[in-house]
Length: 222
Ligand code: CA
Image 1 (cartoon, rainbow, N blue to C red):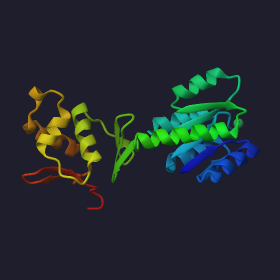
Image 2: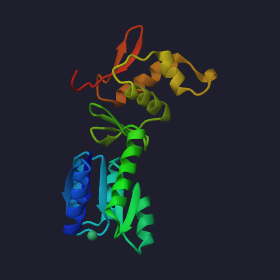
Image 3: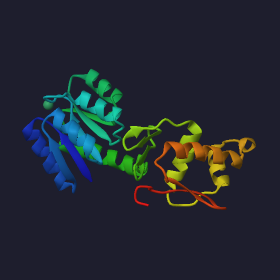
Image 4: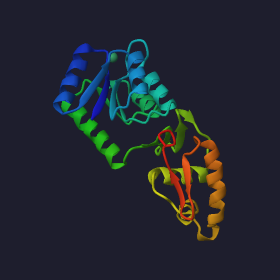
């Protein structure tokens, strides 16, 4: 797994790297909040260990900025022992777990394993098809990093197409997925929703397979 460690204490940073490399992970490090924020924004990590007390940009601001930018990776924050307010603020800012300093390295590694396991069980929180990214945790869609405004029907439709990208889905299948009630189901309206969704997505993303249904493709490589 690929882990980012953001910690300004060089000795602790070294211990964290050592423990993670020993556990078979690949580790990137940052010694201040600005560099940490940058790495977490432009690179993908399976998990992040983030100290809250950091120079240049504090850990809470780093975390808030990542979450505001829809960065979905699990984050474990390191807080000061006595500061319970920090833990609350950290969880509110989108932390997945926290550990108070000083801590045993074994405990940190156990919590990290739990985070990675939870992430694996839920599958990837971010589904990708070319420039389209669907964040299943936050129910949001980004195209080239720009938030897309979708109705709930459009979102459900796109979610199914993305989950099964490359496969042809019939109008009936799509209607069954979108409408909870049998009585509401009308496969003719699917055409309308597909039409609306198409106008919001990069051209060529939804292919019509005549007589069969629709298929989502990465239009940028077609
Ligand atoms: Ca610190």
